[in-house]
Image (cartoon, rainbow over the protein chains, first blue to last red):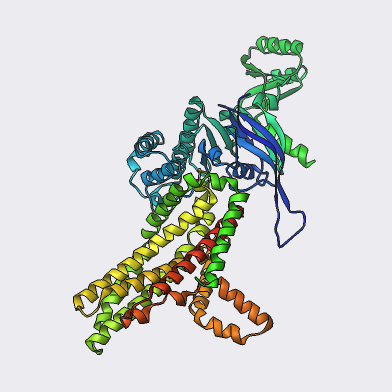
Length: 310
Length: 286
């Protein structure tokens, strides 16, 4: 695997010199690799160590133990940050500047020459849909516009690695949709994306792999299919005017329920499945769907958290 | 060169050597560092000069200086002396006040508002950020001092009674004194909140202005008191050393040796403060 981000035994203990004692372990021996071009999401409840991980990778805080590298460069070096773009959660910027000035400043911090900066700014403001508001002071920007200018500043150096902390936090549905669209576009361009989010449906939709953190420890990591597994259950969805069908299916299926005028019957035996289908047809019902229901990421997350608490 | 200056210079060199040895990347980053320092300084200046409060202070200072011409009960010669002395007083007073408030609201506010995340996640070292903020603050204070000195110069040239060179020299030394003071306040701001920085800034200002008395106080003190007063005298900037109001108002020449001492002492003090500020900020978790 061509690794873009590598974390080896990252541990962070917050110690208060006044309180003494062992301190609070925010991150506990986290080892995780992210391949080039991959999108990985770290999910977990509040205080699970998601933001701590991002902050360590960006050099904002230092790990107590462990090492990490971005694009083969130690996170403690300037070169590691040259290939990274970061969108903080609810980004705040110097609000007396306008979007264009802000991007110009961040471009200068990367040492981009004037001509390149101007070209990049033009492209990025168009990409995030702020070309027409480029001269408006940031204090006049809505939350969605701030988030979009935040993404633009994260892309000013055309980074290979993008770290996004809650990119759709606080956005209205349209803003969240636009942000997801932008992230997909970046995926298509081959960017490696590390994403932290509480919106599990969004994670499921965007990410190749998911890492679940709880109390600083990595609980699970893999593709959605690997994590949720293949279900053995098969579900038959049918519609029928015949009242007795529901009771007759109970004799064949493991579970039967009526929801929104439809009958949902589940079994894990193929023989029984065929009998159920025959029964629906025999009673003049309409067979709407036969599927293998897969638990959602949300259900898996709750399950992992519940197991952990127990 | 006096002993105090020598101590500061040696301490500065030792600290610099230590930081290079401990943080190798800082040494490696020097070539990238200087342009970055000036980029951060430029942004700090651009950001701060847009603050309405600073614009109001500059306007107020100019109005006050021009208003001094209204002291019509003084004889013409006395009027200009009052303008020179009062003007330089105002330069020092407003300059230090602006330095305190700008320092207090730069780094602590960047951390509180999390604007620092998007800067430090770029290829910007902590020391570049701190030193850039320092030079940005100096540029802001320089704008204020520059406007005030310019107004004074114009008034004095128009009155044709004064040689402006002494006044300009005294004004520049006052600005240098503010630069020294700013480095101490900035070092505090790297680990303190805005409010704490303001409080400590005012204490430094008051104690620093009274440093002329420190020698006699140390001479009369004993035991722990003496040690404490000596420590305070070494740590707090001697603001009185940069005060050449009397020389400017009385049109007395400022000796080159005196200027040299003040400059050397000041540069040593600033270097030590910036190294300490960088080291403190380097360890800070943001």
